[in-house]
Image (tube, rainbow over all chains, first blue to last red; front, top):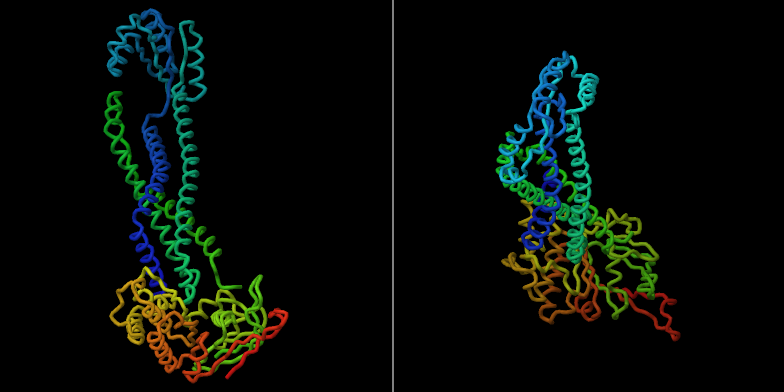
Length: 306
Length: 230
């Protein structure tokens, strides 16, 4: 056990010594690797935050009936009362065009532009919450069919529609993350592999001497593998720092934006699980790059004859 | 310790470096391998250290049948052998200490034992106190001594020296040879290749001379090499 530890301590020391002697080149390599890791990591954190925020929202239940623009307010009130009287409706809220415009003016801060429009382009909207007995897809569909049959109706939107859209967006982000992560993992593997390959070539004469005194292939290979691991760890640290800095920079403005819309949002920073995935992936990919590069290069170098 | 049995070596595209060479070296013996430039002296040492494999014939070194030794076993075999070259092969950007430590690291010698062995090896070659010096700052003679220290620190059973004094002045060469004699006195078998037969005669040790008979047709490859053993 002591010998095993001794071998690895020596190999790690040799790698650290190399990094110390070539700090400039190593630094540039770590920057390239760190950015390659930061991109999929940032996408992953974005996806996690989107899913967390949508999970906090109440389940989509109900429908919104958009009446035709220009309809008199009195007629809208009559329609709302008709709907309120149904046994399969729990609650009805009428948002008049004037109320909608006032709300929009307050949230958007575009008061001047809105005044310049002249007429109010917004319609009256009747928001319907179904009774528990009508909360099934069939019950919602029945309410939708009733509302769409009114000649005064412009369109009916079921709340689950936007939830479905949000799910689709989330799904797209997840796929984008997978594709980006795969491409950048390949980049990380190639960058580390190429760096190690060049280093093995540069130290060919040293490797020959190690072989002359009886150094095995494992003894020769070990410092290069540790070098790959060191690159992976350093790149993961940099990626973590970059994403955390970006999240903190965006957190304040996002909170303000959400507050302006009456919402409370905050960006979640990477937790232990996310960091575990980041460091694990970085170390494994870098180590693999080093394994392949050393295997190729050492097999090409002058070796004991078979 | 060493047995060559009708050993030949032909490099790809070249004439035979050695042909049908047979000799033996006993444990603890010091022998000189002599011959003109191109006679095959370095090839003989390379075959002993398994840096090359013979084209024909059988070789035994320290009980190991080299023809049958697999590639995986070669590092272990080489740890028994110390090597010296005309141009010392050192880690020039590393210190004297790092160079001498290397064989002990590859052999997994315990840390507490390494320092004392390095000190003893450096003392034996006259480089005590130079541990922190970079190898590239040493003179030719000092580099040869450093290579010798590295060769003996692992306590080899066999030391192979390929023209170690060829590029040294007379005085330095003499001191290096004296060091080699001392190592041999300690029981290490020593095979020293040199183009200078006078060196062998002056030492009074056995000489294995690689001679080639020149044919009128100039086709040396068809004629056997005669190994004259005095």
